[in-house]
Amino acid sequence: MGMKIPQPFQYQGSKRSLAATILRYLPEKAERIVEPFAGSAAISIACAARNRAGEFWLNDFNRPLAELLGIIINQPEPLADFYQATWREEPDEALEHYYRVREDFNRTQDPRLLLYLLARCVKGSVRYNSEGLFNQSPDKRRLGTRPAMMRENILGVSMLMRGKTISTSSDYRDILANVKDSDVVYMDPPYQGVCGERDSRYFTGISFDDFVLALDRLNERGIRYLISYDGRLGTRCYGEPLPACLQLTLVELEAGRSTQSTLLGRDEVTFESLYLSQSLAAEVGAIPRIHRRNPSEQMRFLEQETHYGKVSKKVS
Image (tube, rainbow, N blue to C red):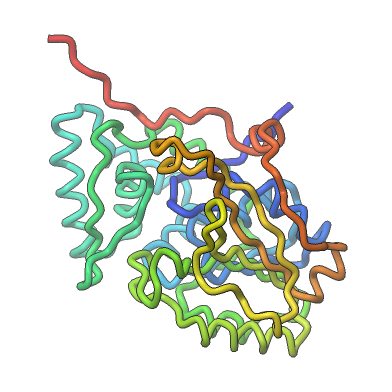
């Protein structure tokens, strides 16, 4: 029987569909999982569901997002009530309503409003303009997760993680400087191939050289870590590979066929890179390899079909 993994919101770049494979490269039971670039916290939630860690530290430089994760975990019922009051079912009204909520969020930075925007915006894709204002458009084909389903997911995450999770909003380097020797760190930083030095999800991107230096310091301490970082489409690689001097083990994860390639009639598959630190690779016995997609395993790990409130066409 499949395990239902709750996930309150879609988030572009989320590793939810790859979680089953990524968890293979974690210790059987970690004392604490630390995510310096938490996003939707898909890996930590999956770990909690499988009882693979005792505690969690979720961090994201996007402060309202980090605060939203904390509210989901610690104040689930009031948040579910707020979402239910914010959600709109009438398609015409919902479109105008989205823009009003977006304006309110940009003025107040209320993380509860961000939940509605994430549930309703195009592809769960967070986008900010140069002034740091949320500017992603609504998905006109759907109304966002229905309140009953959202409540179920919020309560599910809270049940898994309440009382053993902290959420913060700091620079990733501050988090890495404060991890413990017993921690396992999972990093999913902004991808170079997408954002370079600036990423609209994080207001600023991260410097490649600074990131390599931070990893080198983790190596000196023997900290166990793994990183989802760039990848390739067919034979085309994106971003600069992490340097050999870090002595990382590279595992490639098949992420599926590229939508663009399918449209162009090409048979190209996207692979995402997963790098393991020397200490973690030794512990879990990892070797360089390519993981092909196993649809049945992936489906078991995902939640049951979620109805995101598609807009039905009116019959005239």
